[in-house]
Image 1 (cartoon, rainbow, N blue to C red):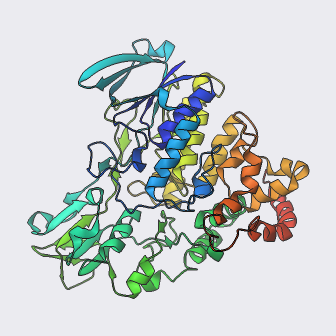
Image 2 (cartoon, rainbow, N blue to C red; image 1 turned 135 degrees about the vertical axis):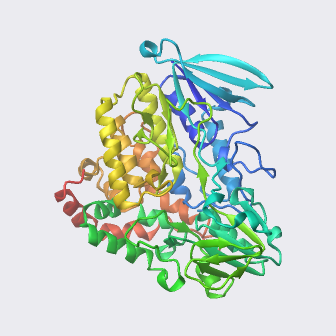
Image 3 (cartoon, helix red, strand yellow; image 1 turned 30 degrees about the horizontal axis):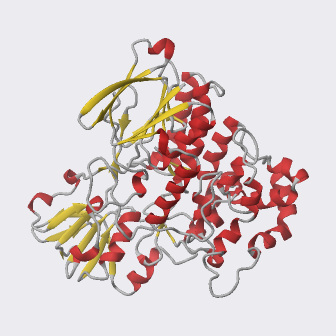
Length: 530
């Protein structure tokens, strides 16, 4: 079975590897001359490609960001600069011999149903290389083109911007803070990139202001007891608590956890509706920069003047020289017909965020079009594992009516939990989603079963971080090194930090959990956890 993979970023590499694991024949088309996608830095901004700034560091820790059968090198820092993440992807491609299946410098122009699609499920794929177009026929398609290439710049939402005499640009254009030297800078929007850029700008600018309509929850990479935030929050125990607590109690817990570092209301960034779960910001500097006056928080922009801006509920104008719009990205698939995947309000109605529901044959899948509250790499890999088995006929999708009903129900739940604005609908609970897809392919770990056969591993899995290696303990794609990778994950976290004194054999964190582990696990079983 021949499979076309669009894009050789992290999702495309995982898709190519998973196809090979299932005995399929992948051909990965990459328009640039190298792998890496989002994580490959270029000095120049290239069309239809993501653009990084040199100082970018990952928001998720290496143990929670790894592909499930390929841990990061132990000497890599816990949170990695983009260059090391690219290095990891190159090691991954080399380890599993993926480059020989990638055609570089090749753009996918169009993907259309084959005339006999209803019976074969095949696709006509037209590619272009050095100005020459070629037509291919593939049995299936994995779309891994990402969602950080087309900036969303809704200038019509900002009255007066046409008469503003200063400079303005989208955050995608940003590379270095030199452009802000001595300037009065306004950041419109409070996403991760916007806060990162604001912090950098404040070191050289005369003044930096962040305008946010909704506010945000802010987390530090350095969480409780100095451990990485995602290794503390993304555990099976925490997920069980969040999904089983009554609504008001769950909201209180989220508020409590978010405000442990500092009181968001005192710093002017408390989310407008604190009961809505927004994608958290990861930044270690913002609170101190607000305290020291380097950064000021303002409400949403009401109107731009010639050389200033007026905010809602603020009577005085504020002088501005440069505006950076941190307004996110549009999602588009220019090579697909709208009848195949239709995007509305930055959202495509896909079953489990992957499959169009209306196709007669489930032979096209979209990977990575999701905003999990955790790293995307293990998620796109799990999607690829599931998709490759669907393509092969080893997993079946529900009837169209069942899939569409679930999508509509999920929208309703997402509106209640996240609030439906822009791309909030793409956000989902990281561990629950991984478990769901893993159960489809028989790779979800059974904590209850392990409790009787390998109790120490069961306790580590339940109370410790839900690192991706858990999904290689059994089922298809089982990896012999999974157990050892799980039991040594804290060693790899501490290895790059304990550089003054010899590192211990293990972190004390799992040991402390074991004291109360057994009793709490039994309580969890009573709740029906398996």
